[in-house]
Length: 153
Image (cartoon, rainbow, N blue to C red; front, side):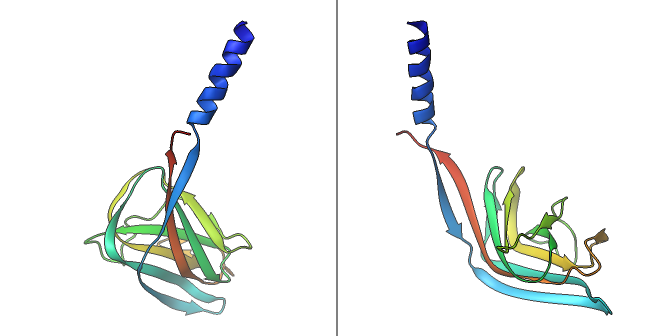
């Protein structure tokens, strides 16, 4: 009897944790810039989406960035309002591998309030962070944000 009761409780808990995600494609102006050209290509390259409306990114949200270009590694930055794009403020600590499908997925582990720009940084070196000497560039094609929600069955 005790085993049956435990199975019923576990089954109910699993049903209540049905997860759905709501996705939103971000809108704005896409641009790019690069500099300090060397024999291997651009020393640094940046592609950015200036958001139409500033946005608060929340811990737990998932960002999917579809990329063009041939970069294998990128850094991602969520630039706060009022901060110059020449600053590294909002840069995530780790670099991201760009898989063959050219979509990187990032789960946010903290809030990024009042964000005015999503940017992807590639090339050889980004804000004194090394990527790869033959890394190439990456251009943003689209940015999608989703948040998982627990909904009742």
